[in-house]
Image 1 (cartoon, rainbow, N blue to C red):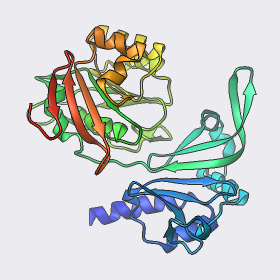
Image 2 (tube, rainbow, N blue to C red; image 1 turned 45 degrees about the vertical axis):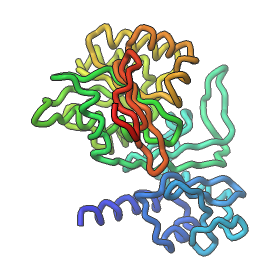
Image 3 (cartoon, rainbow, N blue to C red; image 1 turned 180 degrees about the horizontal axis):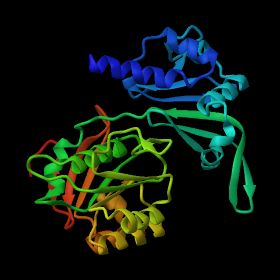
Image 4 (cartoon, one colour; image 1 turned 90 degrees about the vertical axis):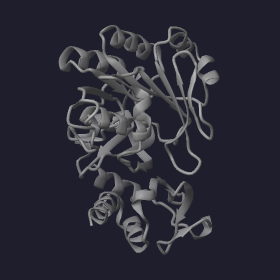
Length: 327
C-alpha cells in the first residue's frame, strides 16, 4: 500500500509540472514513474522520455513510440506554460535558480533549462527565451548502498571514499544512500554527523531549504553552494564527522578536500571516470592518488540497472572486490 502511495505521489509531482497539452498526453498512458528518468522538451521538436533506460517519444495520442513521425511536437506555448507551472507563476522568485540553469521542485526533482544567456561582464545574469527544458526525476533507492557499507566503514568511523563512474550510472543515488546509512547508524555502527554540500541540489533535492530526499537523522545540508566554500563553511559551523560532496573536479575542490582531511573529517565524494588509469591521467586526481588521500575507490557501472558495483580498490590499488570473482 505504501508503495502504491509513493507511485501516486511521484506521478502527481511530475505530471503537474507540464503544460496542459503535454499533461493530458502523459495522463493517458500508464507509465511507471519509478522508471522514468528524464522528460525533455525542446521547442519545435518531439517530447522525449527516458524510460527504463531507453529513449521514447511521447506520441500524439499519449502513447510511447519510437517513431518520431508519431511524436507530439513541443510548441513555444508548451515551454512557456511549463516554466510558469514549475515556478509557481512567479518567475521572479526563481531568478537566482534560473541564472544557474536549473530549478529544484517539490519532491527533489531537478529541472534544467537552456536558452539565451544574459551576461553581466563575465558572469551570467539570467537566462531568457527559455526554449529547452529537462525534467530529471529524482529517485531514492533506499538500501542500494548496503552492499558497500562493510567496505567503507572502519570500526566507529568510515574510510575516505571516492565513487567513480560514467554519467547515468547511479553515483549520486549511491552516495545519497551511503549518507543516509552513515547518518542513521545501526546496531553495529553508531550514526555520525554528516555535512552535505549540495551544489546542484541533486543529493538532498532541497525545496525551499528542506531536503526532499531522506539523508538520515544526523545530516545537515548546505544547498546551492559551491563545493569548496561549502565544505569549509560546514566545518566551521556544523562540526561534521563526515563531509559529502558530488562531482569534484577543479583545483578549488581539491584544496578544500585537503583542508577537510586535515581537520579530521572523513570525506565521501563522486567523480566522472571509467577506471583507475582514467583518473591517473587527470593531473588533479593523480596527485590525490599519489598521496593516498582516498582510502576506498568504488567503481560503478550500469548494465542491468544503475548503481551496479564493478570493483572496489583501497588506497594502494589493491582490489577488494571485483564483479564476477572473489578477491
